Image 1 (tube, one colour):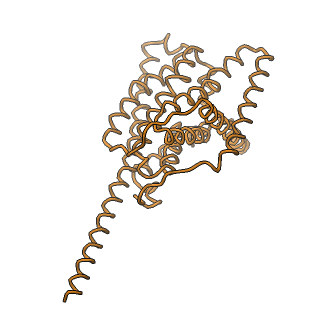
Image 2 (cartoon, rainbow, N blue to C red; image 1 turned 180 degrees about the vertical axis):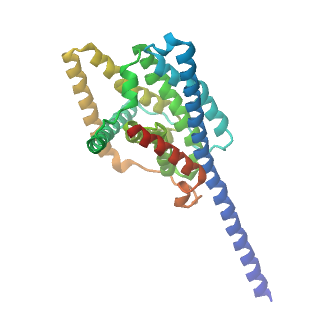
Length: 321
């Protein structure tokens, strides 16, 4: 009888533990789903605000609508004025993950991560151009990069202010602060992959999706290792300044000597970043979650993530067609 009671108590304990694991998995899967839903809501609201402002500007503020700072200003107002505050409101509903103390990077380490980040962007951009050329070949129409069109047709001051300063800060706060803080409970690697892929998809066009994912992964890794977004913000600003600020200004100048010089500098940056990545690849380490919080399939197979992916893919396909 005593053996039976012991067996009963152990069985009861096992069933209770199993039930707790199921409940924990449901709660954690809900966190993943909420993140997807919130990103979807943020994008939809930003898009609606942009449409409203576009229509109102075209009808009542013609001079603003026809100005060379209209499109970037429209983007800045909708993202900074609506998208970022909404992200803070929505993400506040999800508890933050635990993280360690803030770690400082030396100047050398910071430069290393910047070089690696820029190299990652350079190579993935080449892949994107290759894919775009293939699509253009079979469809007979050129795949347009909306960012390139906006930058080339916008006011230089607005480009520097938003594309290289305010935009990167807003994106880092949303993806490497709010979203990453919620997902770090699942371990470094899942958090880095999920936030970087979400960051790439959130750009909603093929020309930016791949390289945004790559730089997002590097910046998420830096954030996870230092427990602060100050370094990812600075890296993001520097990368965007070269691509969105410096490059257009150089092209506008038409000075071949300056163009050649900047091209050589970029080649050196890419070469150095490649070398640093190869040398340090074995040193990359990820902290795992103490226990598996969800099944691998849960990262994708939840309602919020599925809706977010469908929304993004629809916009990406539409941008190509």
